[in-house]
Length: 73
Image (cartoon, rainbow, N blue to C red):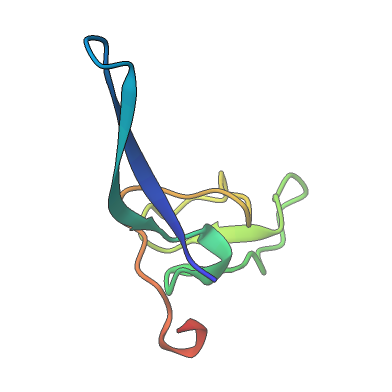
């Protein structure tokens, strides 16, 4: 199941809402640049982002540059 950004517009004159389906959200755990952090330092988080070369990521996180791995269609 994929998550998407939904843009909601409110028409104050008519009191109605309009929804527009936008981009798909790719969670870090589904991104091709996400992996386990196998480094040996004591403060590692356990996960690694190869795009940003950082361990400041979590599986439920996401960013604007996430690309879904081929094995998670």
